[in-house]
Every structure is written in C-alpha cells, then in structure tokens.
Image 1 (cartoon, one colour):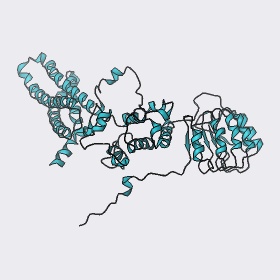
Image 2: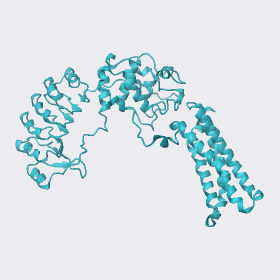
Image 3: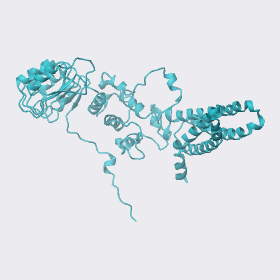
Image 4: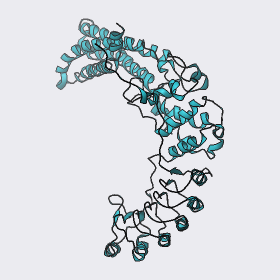
Length: 473
C-alpha cells in the first residue's frame, strides 16, 4: 500500500497542471462567448468545468499523498492544500450554479453573473499555484520578481573569491557555508525542509534530518552529508538531485576535508592537516571553467597585407573566434622556429593572444622575441628545451594568463621568474623538476593561481568497493 500511495503522490507534478489549463480555458470560453461571433463556445464551458473539477480532485488527492512523505514547510503546505481543495469544490459549485442561472436571473444579466461565478474560482486557482510554487521555489515565489526591483541574484560562492588570505579564513563560514547555500538551500533550509533536514545553520546541521545525523565521526564517507554527494548521480539517494546543478570536484573536496577533520564550525584553514588540499581546491574554484582569457576590448584587426607577409614566412595566424580581431598562432608540427619568424610576430603584437610553441626547438635566447607580444594571454612551451633561466623573459608579458611548461627541464630555479608574471592564473608543470616546495612557493602569497602538476591520486570512495551479486534463485 505504501508503494501505491507513494506512486500516486509522485504523480502530483503531472496532475496539478491539468486543472489549471482546463479551468482557465473554461473561464476564457465564458468570457469570449459574450461576443456574438464566439457564442457557440458557451457549450464547451460546462464540460470544461466538469473535467476541471475531476482533475482538481485528482491533484488534491495526489498532493495529499505526496505531502505525507514529509520535507515540506507545514504552514505553506497547509495553505497550498486548503486552496487546492477549495479550487476543486469551487469548480463543482460553478458547474452546478451556472446551469441554474437561467432560472434565477433575467436574460440581460445572465452573462455577467456567469462570469462573476468564476471570480472566486480563479482567485483560488491563482493562490493554489502561488503556495505550490512557494513550496518548491521558496516563499513569495509568485511576487519575488516585484520585490527584487531589478536586482540580479548573486551566487553565494562569489564570497569565496573575495577571500584575501585563505590561510586565515574560517573553513566553514567563509568557504563551506557558501557552497551549501548555493547547492543545498533550495531543499534544505527555512524555505523547505526536505527530509526534515536543514543545512542553513550549525544547530540544524548537527541535529540532522529524519534519517538521523548527517555528520559522523570517522572517515568522510561515514557522514551522510558527504556520502550522498559522492554516490553515482543515477542513485536515488544522490544529492543534489540529478536535475539540479551538481557540485564541482573542488567543492566536493572541500566538504570532504571539512567533514573528515571533525566538521568544525570555527577552525581556520591553517589549522587543518589538509590545508594544502584546501588551498588547491579554493584556487580551482576561483579558476572555474567559466573563466575566460579572451580579451573584451575592441581593437582593429590585422591588415590583409600583414597576414599575407606572415604567411610568406610560414606563419599562419587565425582568428580565435568568428569575426574576432584577436589571433592565434601555432608552430606545432614545425621543429625549427627561426629568429625571423619570431621577430615577425611583432606585426600582430596587439592582436596575438594565443601562441603554441610546443614540441619546437625554441631556445632560451629566442624567448626574448616574445617580450614584444604585450597582449599575449596563452603560451604553450611544453615539450621544449627552455630552462628556468629563459623564463626571465616572460615577466615582460603583462597579460599572460596561462602558461604550459610540462615536459621541460624547468626546476625550482624557475620559481622567482614565474612569480614575476603578474597576471598568471594557470600554470602547468607536469613532468618537470619543480618540487612540491617550489610549487608551494609559486603561490604562497595567496594569489589567484592554479598550479597543475599532474600525477593525480584519486581517493577511494565507498562506492568503488561495492560488489554487486546476482540474486540466487
């Protein structure tokens, strides 16, 4: 029986739209039938009201079973339920009274009375929808646009980017809470307590929900708060629900670090054993994929004559996007890169923002030619023979954001030169001689720099060791 009521309850989101459409159509037909050319529509009003009543009744019944599963604000749920029942009752009342109007009202006033019968019904229908929206989308859902006064909703996680010193930040209020607010508050806050769980303050987190505490001592996956977010997305218990925006790997890591070290609400980042991992995850959030190195300023494009001259030197400059004046140049596949070719790039110094010199024989001395490329944003030097000493030339690139040095001989001697690249935000050092200490020094001043050294070690999750067996027959 529990399965049947649960199944009927989950039909509510489907059934609830049927009475809305049918009853609104009945009201429109009643209004239009006042005009002579639409008078025949009045024959459809009665059947529409009858079916609207049946659909509203079915929606009310399914809504009752859905509410019985819990997780909804009682005050709002009561209002939604009561107005839903009122809608069904009023639909039946209008259906019955409308057929009796001809016996009570003279012909001249009948049309106005019939339309008037719909006013309480339409009011109940609107209020039912309002409180239903408030249950799933938060209070004042219907009128939120009016109260917002044109303001733009700010992502709570933006507060993490405003942290100036990660080391002294408090992990929960400054980092974990904005993540929970962005990903979990829709279902687990004062707006809605799905599973009787709230995550919007310390006392409610410690209390847990109807299934018990969500924080437990021991490994991170002993706590339901963390275990739910690492379950496969198709699992019924995975959180957030698959139709909601999912946590990024960096956000999951931060919650893991917080939970596995006791889920403290006041401890600063520097007091955590996993502070290096916390630094890395916070920087990964700051350098999320939405970040763009593409300039927004409008500039003049390179002339056809300039581009032809570059092609004569076997330099093929292409737009980074359709109709964009900004250019990209790749020497990939060309081992020898001459001084003349590098010197010629100055002709497109304003437009060139992306340069690939990977797998070429470029030398440290030749890197000096790049100092004229003052708008260069992305530079690939991976699989080349450049050394730590040669990187001193790159400090003259004021706009360089991404730098790939993987599979080169650079070592810890490169740290000071790399730190002088003012706007660098992504650095790739896979398979280089830069040590962990050198990597830490590169970003020790708290700058917004993500260092990727490769050699990823993925943590073992509980789901990785799950064994599935075919049931015995």
